[in-house]
Length: 77
Length: 240
Image 1: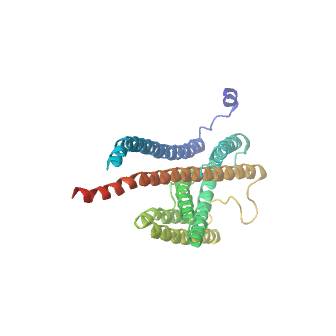
Image 2 (image 1 turned 90 degrees about the vertical axis):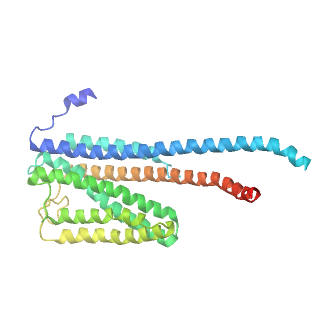
Image 3 (image 1 turned 180 degrees about the vertical axis):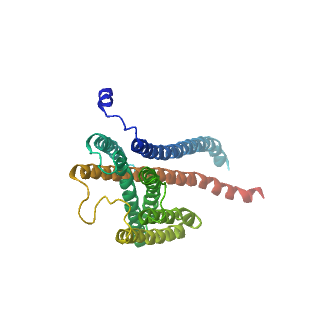
């Protein structure tokens, strides 16, 4: 990689070089912004998923506990 | 479902981009007229072309949505347009940078190619407020599809109109008469367009899988909330 970089010609330090670098940097920045936004979205999905899983777990525990207590009551009535 | 094949596609995109960038900077000859500045074209032109094609693809998906009444096609259409708008922003910005370097101005209002592309971009910028102004999901999807079809049909017409217009200050990658790109430049340019198309497809798939996960999560939440609501409605009369 370093050898490749060493062999690579330098970007011409004239007007063209400056603008070419600018255009490619803008493209990379645009991609990075998009990836960052998508990353935030995915983090939110992950958080929501964890929350839903917790609710489901709590519901399951509640149902198990409710089943244990309500079953004898039903038998009595 | 949408995430299927995303990994190989992403790898192919990265590999193709690495090859293309190497070709752009180490293989493609320096253009005689514009010099090093012409390297922007390997980025700007594919961005603009892929975004325009993406708009048309969004229109085709919208046709399929209206024909089959399947919300999946509406999602495809929305995401295709969304990614194309991002590519169009990239095309506008890189084109503007090239214009500054070549013409000395960031924007030239009497150049039909620039102005027509801006019109297309602004047209699609109205897609979001138009879509989200409608609350009913089905109506929103139908109206958005009609918009996508109309605007999608406008894109090639607009392209042809500009192509036939008199002012040709904007350089042409594919010359209408003699000239055009030499073989080596054409090869690099083709690689650029393939990489950009791959990037577009990858981002569309990525966004679709994120949207699908979000939708499934919403359904899961609704399903979890449903028994509580039902239970509370059953409990309520007992309280009174």
